[in-house]
Length: 342
Image 1 (tube, rainbow, N blue to C red):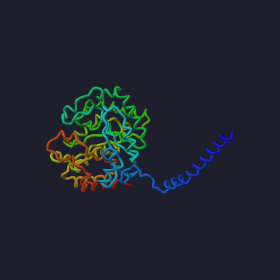
Image 2 (tube, rainbow, N blue to C red):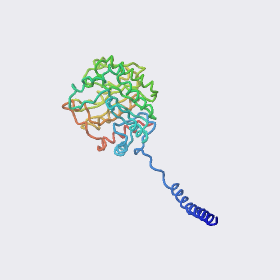
Image 3 (tube, helix red, strand yellow):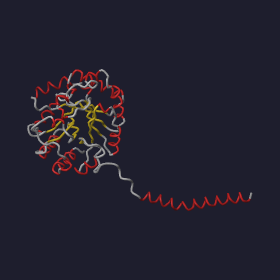
Image 4 (cartoon, one colour):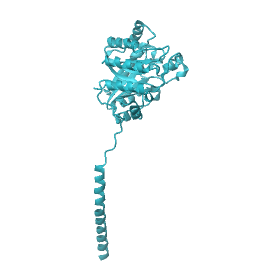
């Protein structure tokens, strides 16, 4: 028995010594942790303002918003993206990253189609696509996908501006066909989101200003697509100055925006905003002045993604420049962002 007792005693003493030796090290580590600064938040610099009077957003993925914010010198409060039905997926990772960096608002341009390369031309781009047509959606062909997508957006801890089937009053997208079916598809979409409990989603009925048409023709072209007040939260409009033969100064765009505001009595969202390089500084200064006298414009989304409209046109200016590497334009955008803060 004595060897056994001796072994147990030896083990006990050894364990006690190890604990005693470890305690100072633990205290040292604990003190170091307390003294060390907390890890830097995973957010852009400067941080997005959580409560802007008017939200400014960019079509930049949330993994690179910090780069955009540093180069421009101000942080957007919203990120935007295009998402095609043909992807047949949710955007959970994109939403999670947006929230992680402090973004509480997103804009999703949700396109019911299989994207067609812009180089094929507007005629081929506008061809109906079975399964994605307005009548197909109205009859339930996309219900399962839309419900899954709605549940994904419902999990986002913030506001989602959903721009479904935009610029329907043009001729370059397949969903421009059959306005009556468009209305039915829109209403079905909204009911699906209601069933999913997506109370954070705001439905943006987004048109094109069609400045090549007179105002009366343009307004007549909008009416058949209108889903009704109870199905729409905001009115969207593209605001792109292509330059050259498609020179669209703010003084031409503004009357269309005011008409949308007076006709539909909803907040206005500038869903795609960009301008040609040549007169960019003046155009952005005019945009800033418009925004200051138009508090009903609630969101501005800056987009310098490759433009389908540019590919389909000739004699226009340069729109594929980058504000991040253009100090005068960056300064103008920085001023617009600053104006929108409370």
